[in-house]
Amino acid sequence: MKVLLIGSGGREHSLAWAMAKSPKLTKLYAAPGNAGIAAHAELSDLDVSDHAAVISFCRDKQIEFVVVGPEAPLVAGLVDNLNAAGIKAFGPTKAAAQLEGSKAFTKAVCDEANIPTASYGRFDTAADALDYVRKKGAPIVIKADGLAAGKGVVVAMTLADAEAAVTDCFDGSFGAAGSEVVIEEFLEGEEASFFVLSDGINALPLATAQDHKRAFDGDEGPNTGGMGAYSPAPVLTDALVAEVMRSIVEPTIATLSKRGTPFKGVLYAGLMITSDGPKLIEYNTRFGDPECQVLMMRLKSDLLDLMIASAEGTLDQSQAHWHDDVALTVVMAAKGYPGAYEKGTEIKGLNAISADEAEVFHAGTKSDGDKILANGGRVLNVTALGTSVKDAQEAAYKAVSKIDWPEGFCRTDIGWRAVARDN
Image (cartoon, rainbow, N blue to C red; front, side):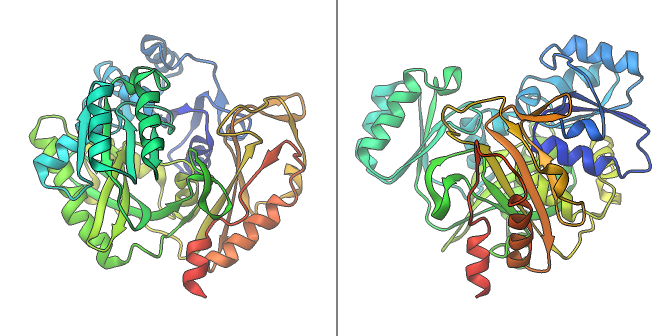
């Protein structure tokens, strides 16, 4: 089977790495890909925002299946256009992808299906939003309604921070994404990520993970797209997983099906495990990044088979099997991220890391002859397995120490909650 992978990040590199193991795969293309993905796929500079060009490329290359990695093409309706052209694709339609494309949409689904989540208000003027914030006080959470590349959420611990976040949204800091704002109750607890595949009717639980959003050690500094992750997440016990499926995931899938917009693809539930049980923070309609990297390291089943079953509506006949080992990934980012950072700096030492030690998934790189250059904010995902979180952590940081990149940085404490829990 010829497959086209859409995307260029660490998530897509790990998906390419996993799909390359499938006996079904005969040829993998990636658009636009990166220097790491090039080891598994033929790269194309195809403009993925031009859906007609994507369809033409698929016909020209006789591609039978398209895997859409990032959220923006899903929200823009790429899967709808591919399906209309008779090309199978993995991912939700534009209507179902609103679960990520609009936080207000997700809150409406929660209201309709009685899904446990933070109390909230939604506003389309700064004056009303500021009035709500002043009545509620801090801490409080301010969210730009639309897609903001992981940067449209502010956990405001003071009223002044909350007011500044509201003002930023309506002043255009997040473009059209901030034209409407959702303001939520601050939830106390421990965050975790839970993933399921859906074929519109059936839901197949995948695995759990825990992400680290803050830029610096000890969960300090600004929010980022994610500085590391590990799987499984000990906080999500089997009993809690069953509760999440019953009270959050299954009602969501049933509600979208009832609305006539069935959800197909991977549903990523960002959860807060509170004293009152699990509550939904937000949905993403694609694999998390960097959570995908640790899931792919642990997955024993054929990823391509599972994705095809999701697209074809046969997940009830599928199972996902996992390695018992813990997987942990450390994100190496360009200094300055998530603010301004330099591109084009050279990364050395990658060849010193063997596949037995760790997998280095490229997140923001490009090739320049024999050189690998940084080409983004989050640049590398150094990912290792171990019998415990501590073992996986030690293996990942040992591999990190072999990378010579003075212009990069990483957190040194990925997995700290789980390590502390084990001690």
